[in-house]
Length: 339
Image (cartoon, rainbow, N blue to C red; front, side, top):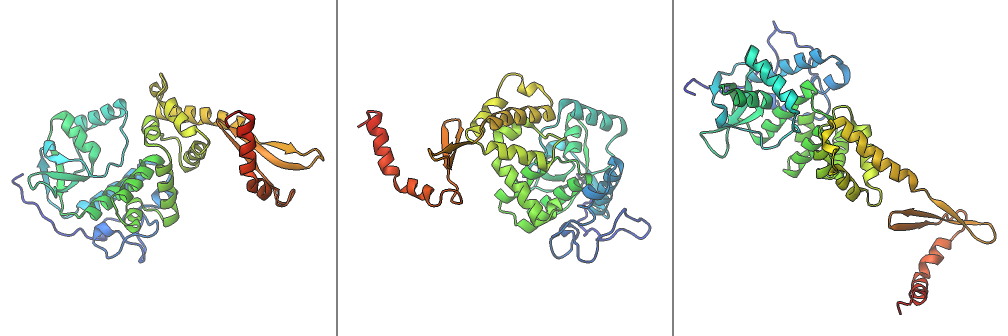
């Protein structure tokens, strides 16, 4: 760590001789790159997940982002034992096979791209990684120094760098992005900072946070990253969990023997199928009065029974029942011998 470390600002545009795959328009910004306001709508980075289909194109775009972030900086070699993880995790645990494959890639070809770290705000002799977590883990496992650029970053700049680099690669799954957004909000980051980190608009951010906060943590962690499933299917699971008793049932299901033995997508499928089967059985039945009027609908789900009244069919009947609940309850207690 004796080498000189430069903290010069990174240029906000690539050099003329290097044409990037896409350019930002005048009203789009990247806070980390020294511009004066957060990103409020998807720009060139966020558009990757929508407009670029190939894995190579996404990787090239992320490499371009990293090049801009690291350009003009001095690369140093650090002992990975001195580098801490980001204070906001974004990825869920990768499979052992994936980690082993990535580690072997680093062993054979070396670390081609440095990671980005900042001096630790808690310990001046340590560092904290902004992006390059997998490269850092590989260096730790291989017992090698990790090539890094050190920059003085605020908390906001660190999470934006972390989020934008992942958005460039688009390799975070929907639920990983949702959890990352929810964790940033828990730490009181502004919505604008979170939108900049994830390259999403306000509506998309709200959907991410809603799913992350409505699905129990135990369920998400048991399912894992579920790379095959996006917002629509996670929303389906969220709606199923709102059913009577389904939250407790889901937590019990993910703890059953054999559940964890499946891959992440299969675990997701199994849970949705189990909860969906129960939901299909919970159908409303119509209750007809002696004169044939369909006066109410009865829904039994688990230990709950619900009555629904349609004012278009029987005006004020529901209100009448509500006003006589005490009398009905007293009659119930008398009939059941509880008085």
